[in-house]
Image (cartoon, rainbow, N blue to C red; front, side, top):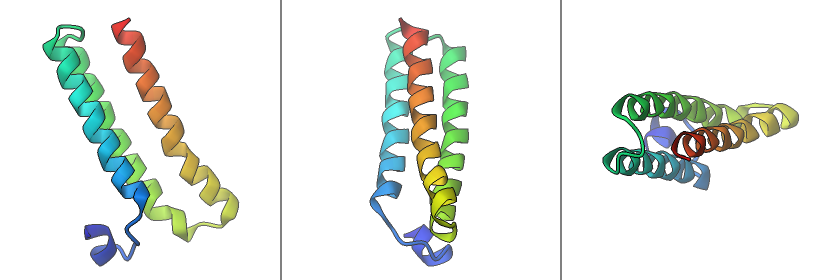
Length: 95
């Protein structure tokens, strides 16, 4: 609702997916830390990276409809690539 009122941006599925992904990753980090698969320092660093990714994802989300087609495509796929890279980092840290 905040994005639609203040930023004049329609609410879409992407916003829900961004919020759900961040929540899922934070839960995973919490569980990995509590099961001692991740040390506190690693969990904190990964949580900070998640915060940075959330800000970047929201910037892409807000910019998407104001861009021409090709830059919009790149803008729309950038968060997906970032999510993949982050997930791979977490997996390699626990294996």
